[in-house]
Structures are given as structure tokens and as C-alpha cells.
Amino acid sequence: FFFFNDTATTEIYTEQIVGSVRCVQETGMEKELEHLSKEIAKQLEDVPKRMHSELVGIEENCFKNASGDENYFVKCMTKAGKKFKHAERSLEFKMAFFQKNIYDCFHQKAEKGESFEECK
Image (tube, rainbow, N blue to C red):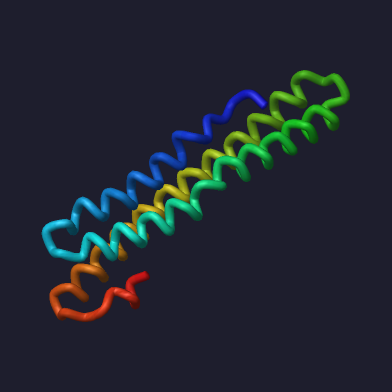
């Protein structure tokens, strides 16, 4: 396993969510949003482990299927790396979209004095 730094990825996603907490502190809904942020961060904790495990499996398959052919192995791993990079970027964009939707929902509910449960 040689090319994937998975800890930074989770830190980026967690920071995006925690950023939502900072954006809404002045509205009085920070406790609710902070609680939600912690729940989501817990769920994201195992993402790097799963990605690492999957990449190790891919690396083993590429090596096995290469049968000593270095070029095949490099192509196989490059293709896998591109797929993972695409999946990582996609998740990053989804998290940004999720962050914006949560903020908007919490903000609208706070203005109306309604419960934040629907936003979770």
C-alpha cells in the first residue's frame, strides 16, 4: 500500500461540518448543530479505514494479476487511484452540499422558532 493518505480526507469532511457550527453560533442553535456534527463525525471515522482496506485489496489484485508485469501493475494501480480520487472528490462535494442544506434548514427553523429535528 503506497499512495493514499486517508487521514487528511476525514479531517476535511469533519472540518466542513464543524464549520457549520461556527457559522450559526450567533443564532443560538449551536448546541443542536454541534451535537449533529459530532454524530456525523463519528460516522465518518471509519471511512479512511474502509478506503485503506479496499485499496489494499485492489493492490493485491493488481499485483496478482500483473504476473510480474510491472507495466500492468502500474496501469492497474493508476486506474484504481483515479477511481478513488474521483470518489473522494464526489464525497467532498456531497459534504459541502450537505453542510449548506443543514445550515439553511437550521437557520430557517431558528427564525420560525421551530424544532431542528427535521434538519437532522
